[in-house]
Structure formats: C-alpha cells, structure tokens
Length: 591
Image 1 (tube, one colour):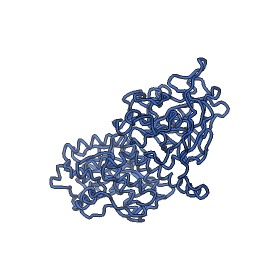
Image 2 (tube, helix red, strand yellow):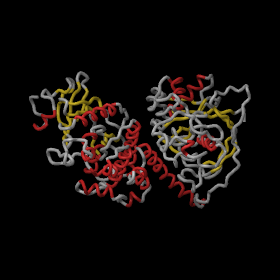
Image 3 (cartoon, one colour):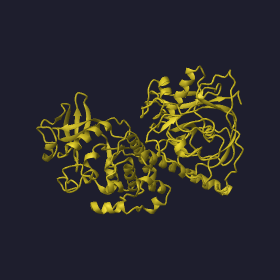
Image 4 (cartoon, helix red, strand yellow):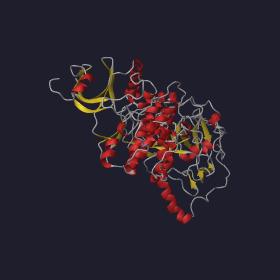
C-alpha cells in the first residue's frame, strides 16, 4: 500500500498487504463508524467491485463464533431488498468482516437529515419493501436486532426508481447496544462499549422493552423497531428523544409511546400501534404480520374513500347486516363414470352469505356481508397442495420447511400456483384452464407471467378457486367464523410451533375440507377489491389490479385472523413461507 487511501488508524483493521483472502484488493474507504470501517475493494479475478465492512477487534471467542454462524445464514438470503452478502470471515482470527455489494444511494438517516420527513405516499412503498425483506429473514429464523434509519438504505433515490435495502444483518449481533448490555461481549464489563471517539456502539432508541427487561430476542423485536422507524420516516423526528442511554430505556418502559397526532389518528395509526405495543404478546409477532396489516391498511384507505362516496347515496354501510339466508351450496355425489382425482370434495351450486357481521371478533371493514350465488358445481381440494404433490409435477420444492412431504407447499407466488394448475391439467389429459403470456423463469424459483387469460372455450382444467368458492367451501353451510375452536381446526400462532404442519391432521369442516384455516394462506383467483354492497352471481373479481387475494390465515397468524371471512392480499409475485394454495375444477355438466 504505497499511497494512503484512508486514515492511518484504520491500518490495524486490514492485512498488511491490503489484500483480503487473496482475492479482495482494498482500493479506498467508503465510510467509518462506531463498528469499524467500510472499504471499497475489487474482487479478483472477477473484477467485481465490492464493499468490505471490517469491525474493530476485541470481541469474545463466543461472539465471533455466533457471528460466523449467523453470517452463514445471512449470506443465504437472496431477497432483493436485503443487501447481498458475498463472503464473510475473520481477519487474523480476530476481526470480523463481511463482503457485500456496492450500492448507490443514501441511508434513511441521511435522507431525513438532508430532506426532512418522507411523504406517506413515498414512505409506505419503502416500508412495504423493508417488511418484505424482514419477513423473509424471520421465516429463516433470523432477527436483525439493530434496525434503525442508519441500517436502511435507499438505492437510486428518485421517486420513480428507488428501493429500500436492509443493511447489516449479522453485524448487529456484535455491535448493538442490546448485545453489549446483555453481557455478550466481554470488552464491555461496565456497560456499552465505546468507539475510539467516545460514541456508543448501536443505539437504544429502537430497542424493544422486553430486551431491556429480560434480554429477549425475537422477531417482535424487529417489528417494534420498524414501527418506530416508520413514524420517524414520516415525521422527521425519532419517537424516543432522550439524549442518554437510560433516558431512552425509561421512555420505552413507560408504555404508550407518543406519536404525532397526524400519524396516530390517521389511517396508519392502528397499524403502527400494533407494531409498537409494549408487550410482545400484543404486538405483531413477526414482519409478515406487520406487512399484512400495513398492506390491508393501504387498501382500506382507498376503500374508506369509496365507502364515504357511496354512503352519500346509500345511507352508509352500517345498516347492511344481512339476515342469515338458506345455505344451498352443499356436497354432492358424482356417478362412477366421472373421473375425479382422489382428495377432492364435490360441491353443488347455491346461495350463501359472504363476509362477516361487524360484531364478529376480528371483523374488518373489507368483509362487508352480501349474498353470493354460485351457478356451477365444482370440486375443490380437501387439503392445500402438498410438497409431495408439487414436487411430483414441478420437479423442485420451494418450501422453507421441508420436514415432511405432506406439509403444504409454501413460498409459492400466485404465478407459481397458476403454473401448477396448468401442469396438473396436462398431467391428467385435461385442457389447460389458463392461457399464459410472457412466461419467464422456473415455477417455484423465479417464475413470472406477463398476462393470464381464461380458456373460455374449454374450461374444465384445474384452476385456483374463486374467492367466493373458497369462502363457501370454508363455511361448509354455516355462518360461524370457523367450524370449531381454533386449536382444533387451524394451525395458527397458538399451536403451530411457528411453522407449517402436515395437512389433514386437525378436524375437517362439515364438508370434509381440512386446513381451510391456518397452516398457509391460500391464493385464490380474484384480484383484491372491496366487496359489492348488493347480491352477486358467480363473482370473479375485477379484471385487473395490483394485488391478488389470499385467504384463511397461516401458521403465524393469530386466532382472530384464522376465520372464514378474513381476507388477505399480496403482489402476485410474492413468495413467503406462509403462502400456499389449493386447487379446484369446474364441473359444469353435473349441477
């Protein structure tokens, strides 16, 4: 290193040669902080420019071992909103380092300092991206521990192209105040470790109360931090304003946090409160639940505007409590000449009440009660599609929990589910129900479709159930929220051990359908949209929209979510361990 490219005191962080692991040639300094420094480097022989974050020495052997284990898991994350980690290790067996991609942009902290609060219409998409990435990490058992504006990076910061990326998974393990307070680092016997400049490493401003009290680390810890960051993003000021460590602790422990009224009383207030409740049991349990709640609130905001406009002419929606109707849909029987695969239930058409009354626990305003008439018989899977069924047709298994082939296939997008339906039709000699345009990638991995049309000439192939068909099947002739106590009929947060379980183990509904509630959210055909305020026949949902609907709740959902009427939605490209599906087929000649 003949030309000095960084301050002399940082020489101790790097090998004497300036080349790390015989392939990373350090070429400059990108930044320095309480943790250490970030260097720009070139990876040989690829010629790839990378960033190398090197931390100060002095960590205990136990902490270094934990860092390496977690870094290995973090390196396996491939989510587009998590900074890609290429390599990691220890320099001279002492100084942890991580090699990652170089990005162009600025941290959220820098954005707030330079430009002030972020407008909600810009903040919400950024937060949704961050929660998508965090949900993926939580599904793999990873907790960030140190989420804050400095660890959220806005790439290509122009409103039309920007994306949010999460930094420093794994690094948080050894640099946050949380770990140091808990005594995991033997360099800090008297309290938080200080940098050479006297600044505390990490920050207590975003740590959850249970960590200060009991040292508890869980996904709910990240949820709490992201809730605080979301408020700060839109207000421009941190929620916790104390200037010293113990002042921050007391603000967290006092309970109800003070948010700006325009946020607290606005359409996002309840969502943010759900993320920042003092007790973890009252908080969203992980980023997936926070993400679902925020997505629903975003759509509710537009629904509320619609309801206000319609209410001027209709007197509002509050009077629309429908009386129970005769539930005509019911199981039927097929003749011996009909070739129906084992594992399906045959249902006759009829009329039922879709949605839920306002008094139902967990009721949401997108569950407006209305009468629906199904005009054709159909068959629907008695269980969600399993991993064994998926693998047999598709040749891979995208699922995170692969402990049992009878677990539902998960981590599948709506596009993946549509592709499976067509593959199932081909395998059984049936015409494909979907006409797909612009297919790219491999289903279960990186598959996308530009457009989907229905085969209206011959529509007896396998398909996703419509939302109305799904709810009719889930209700099984009742108007109850579910067909029994949650623990007996649904794998949910109270009994699932936070992962999927083999299908068909819990009590079926009256029509023999298993796992309609819990285990995995199930994709259905419909674009997500507000319900109509009058009776409809054979609804298919609107012809276009950004989100596709999923139903039933998943293994990480609370009991109030696992109801026949509850609705979820996501981008059709979204894959996560709580998303699966079941399939259906029209039986037009058998009604």
